[in-house]
Image (cartoon, rainbow, N blue to C red; front, top):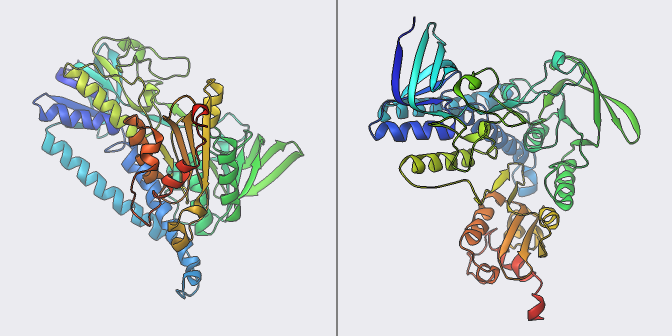
Length: 467
């Protein structure tokens, strides 16, 4: 029989929030262990956020080089060496692994590489990657097991061995024709990157538009920008079956309003949502309940249905962004320290790293309408921002949603250069409850992209009592 090893805190999964909590608790003198089955540091530095942005940046360099003559720089024939793209990405990952191993060592937290499952309340059995088994118990337990790419139950899809974002980032040869199932964040980012490397790309989206949670004008602008780069789209396309195998020859049969179509490709990438990694880890033995979608049921303090057990990040149904996992960490850290923090009413920004990027914080126009909130709207084309006269990054627009009864900013969306940076300025104004004229009249450095906020907010219609 295995001997039990006791810890002050056990953390299952080494995602962003979990590892930060481990390092914090260990530095405060607690005995902490993190159980991770595969990736040191979790998926963000290993296979998701940072690796994808690394490859996207390489694709941007390829795109700029291909158009260098427009800016006065003459080049010769352009070709992409995918093996070097992959090597550059892996070099970054190796640096991240070294950083994380050092952080575990310096903090005193123990990293245990193996597959963990609950065998009782706050008790985890670990099948070690190196062989053998350990039985761990914790005074407190935190679950941070993340999610994985969904593979829809489409006939022939699983047998076709499609790529997910993980395998797509490991390619060392360029696909000649990439088919992408899904027009969300991952699908669009990867589609543009491979198009810029030189692949022919077609996006197949089942819904009425790409980036389905955005307003129609945002989706149409994004589709237009990507179509201008040569990416093909099939919208409201039901995928009926898949034949062949990704990496050789693959065919996807879809049904649209105009009938059935058979599209041929060399590679197939599935980007059709995420599934929490909560199956098969013994949560029922730990007294941890799931909701109807398979996410761990938590309250606003991120406490599960089992005493002294918390969950954070994607497996707990939090918005699927690393920066949200970081905030989940802060909530649990502070609550363990005697405070009373919650996930209620937090203002979560997000950014899709296409070029130009799409960023939003707060309500969209459509969300405000569905909630019955009367708002004032203003838009500004990026071509009106003077910075773009110098850079020629004139694609996209800014859009703001302002409350009709007062001057509070309720939401902001932007497709344009530096959107992820500009959205932070609006987020700060919203967090401070600044009326929009305060931001409109701020002295912002010229010539910057953020300077466009003044012009945008000048376009906000007056309140009825001001007319």
